[in-house]
Image (cartoon, rainbow, N blue to C red; front, side):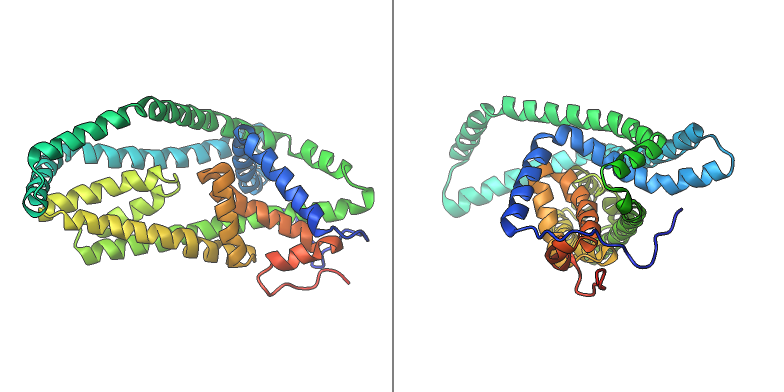
Length: 362
């Protein structure tokens, strides 16, 4: 892979951008990203995969493998990896279903004991409790159609992404030279070297991002396992690392991966407190991962300060949901690369940096 020069060449621009112009650009970009997320989310994931697979494809091509075949092999490898993660997800859910009969019996007993406790402690009869539950279910029934519609839309959107991401990734890798040349044509010829440096360093930044994510999964897996071990859940390291791997699928992964340890702890100890303790462990670790571990591990590798990473994660979640929480981190690293080489964006470069920036302009 091509190496960039040690001293970055800055964009020669004497114009300074005002704070108002930067804010206007941010608002406009946010609106475009929000309303165009159906296109931009799979395209962004594809670009991320393309940057990661580019060195692998390039290496295979230097060994005499046809360009198209190299791309197919690389995409197939990523597809198998994602398939393995999905297999773990369904395996977890299948094991949970096998325990469902025992779990349902214990759940019925627990609900009955809770009803008796409420009846004795708060003097609320079982009939009144039943009436309250029925009224609640009837009132929530009007929202059932909306829930089903939103679920169906989410599933169809996910299926669309799963189909389009490999297609976009393959096309980006196949037409990478054309896309690079088109990007060069957007700028004056004297800036071609700088654009080339940014492209090369962007690939490096994406590699650092993936390395940071691997560190995150390792730390989360250890914390999950230690927490489950302290509680006394059987096979804590198995459940802990499966839950860590499945966090790759935001929200759904952690929920399904927690079902089996919750069921096992409930059946093993015959107490509601152990499942609640499992939920507490996963909740605490997820909070630490989202707001401390992820920003620190990823931000330190991308040389972006932790405060900016936290803000970007929140903004990404607002605009693109779970996908934005992942994708906006490498986006901000690319913005920092551009800001480091643009004198008019020096303020932005300083704000995004980790406090150890080197001077890139004279």
